Amino acid sequence: MSPAYVNENHYRVYTEIEVEKLKLIQIMKALGMQLKEIKTLFATEGTLDTVRLILDQKIRH
Image (cartoon, rainbow, N blue to C red; front, side, top):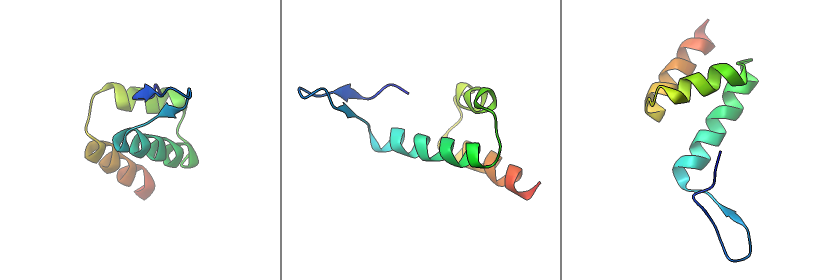
């Protein structure tokens, strides 16, 4: 995931939305999802709410 920007000290700066995405990716990995599946989920340009809904369904199964 690319940062929103890199500051003058070469630190990567992420937005709150990007941090939420990273947290979701960690949860998905913990649930056993493959990176390919995760990438496909995010590539569908669904909202974070859509991704959360899919995760809830995955947890129930």
